[in-house]
Amino acid sequence: MLRAWILSLLLAGCGGGAQKFNGVDITGANYARDFVLTDHTGTKRTLSDFRGKIVTIFFGFTQCPDVCPTTLADMAQVKKQLGKQGDQLQVLFITVDPERDTPAVLARYVPGFDPSFVALHGSPEQTAATAKEFKVFYQKVAGKTATSYSIDHTAGTYVIDREGRVRLFVRHGEGVEPIVADLKRLLS
Image (cartoon, rainbow, N blue to C red; front, side, top):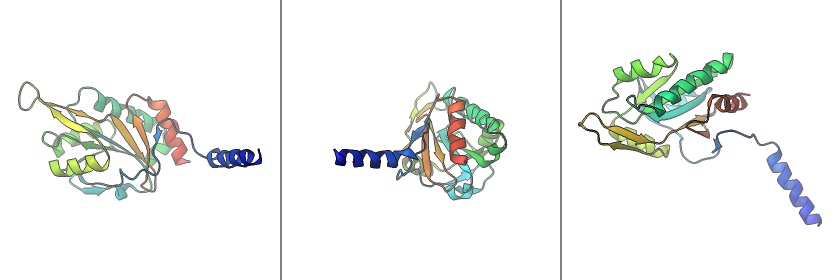
């Protein structure tokens, strides 16, 4: 009886201060640690370039008909709803279509959702290595012509804390309000 009581106190103490998130809490994961890619202005970037900010990372492509533009539009709303804290958020879009998503295409597309959003690209090899590091699936799906293909890809967003550690995975379609609540928890 005493052992059960002590165990219950220990378990209650361990979980009592833990933050509860709407997204999937992946704190301590041994992946999604870094990348070396080029942004849409031609600057080489790594995750450490954004230390001090909450970073969201989404993998997609500019010709995506639904998930990618919806995610970027949602993140623009998240930033607005954060108010002044929105300045502490950096949204990153990593293309999984380096063949068609040139720097010029990315520069028109991604900042169109919010001027502070950054598009990242790399060679096909760099893209594959980055996707592997973030455990992101993507695969070209043939279209009617050689250039009309689509790409199936993981439809979720990683959230990195101010120290550069992966904290959350937000599934597509979670909604703006739950993301805002999670980011406010991380910012406080």
